[in-house]
Length: 209
Ligand code: FE
Image (tube, rainbow, N blue to C red; front, side, top):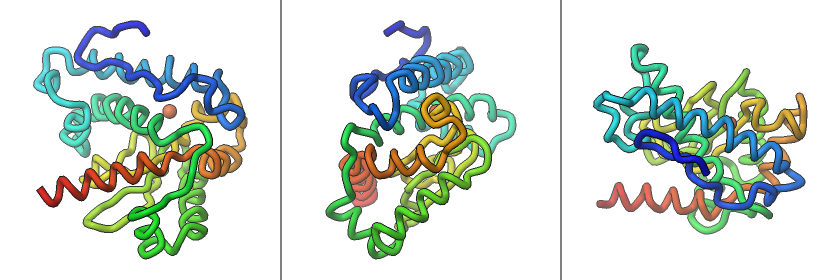
């Protein structure tokens, strides 16, 4: 992979480009990671050059620029760079189901697996325009969030646990306008609940520390 000038690099995918077929094609992943995600990383590098953000971790840049109109350009690029790296880790060939603590929390706080699926898919499908559907933990509670554009739970001080990218670039080559089909297929066949469980556990150990 081509090295980028600046502090941030495009992280490699956690699986081969064709590993998510037939749910997401190698062609989609190739454009989504190699062009879209790469461009967010490159533009973040350009925008932080010579600023106090240059030596900050990406998630801190996102948290610090969120909600400030004068740093919106950097927020958009940095949040998109961060969100995409997170998104790739939310996917894996074969997917899976929540288990353990995160499954118990979904049962207790979000009405159980079927209700959770219905609410998450609805949030993703109804997110108007470009955006992201998230499962996050905020103030000790699980929450489903539909966030437009580069929206990310980090901007709210919440902990991201799971996400689906619903920008058209995520599905148009494979599903054209049929976002519901894409979201349902990803939810049922690709979500990596071990990764989400790790995020929840890390957030709990941070709070305990
Ligand atoms: Fe995307």
